[in-house]
Image 1: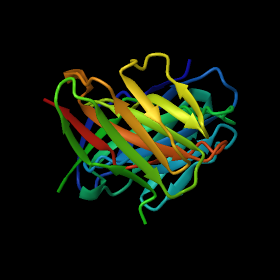
Image 2: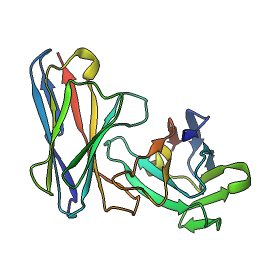
Image 3: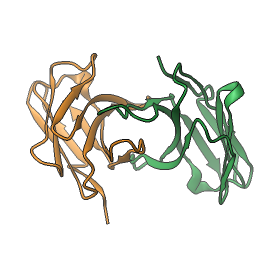
Length: 118
Length: 112
């Protein structure tokens, strides 16, 4: 069974500090996708990144960066120079890849509540 | 520009009174999903449609039903809402074999 663990429930940082969110996953699949979604107070889940299991390159997008370590089954997310607009819940998720017929099922972690204090 | 639209954003219903939540999409995606998200929890998949094929999760209560009359629309019907069904309901879509899901803004359901 697929499982995603996000150990930290709530993280508070002062604006401009960096914050790293840990994500550890378990799967018996040899190919899979990993995702990060942001859920601001408005409720909509906003896609941030998708990474497939064969691509271990780290990625940077503006102030966001992701560190994929297949050896430790981790896909950590760092926000650099945090801003108040980064306050949200962040979910790590895992799905089979390639998705089988009709199955794009996402296994979500419990989420990290990030509070950025001005 | 909204791609996945959910109406209404807030719904109040009475205990036991049937309620329908709606979702529409402009992406022409063939897969549509319904998730239930309770406070401080991760979204939980209720069911999804792959084209017209309905796929129910094993632990989704019978009280929850869904309809997909065409590619663009999908409905969530709760036949007899209980207090425990109060939650945010999220609709999502994806194009098959691409994995990425696009979420709507959600409908927050209150049961009185």
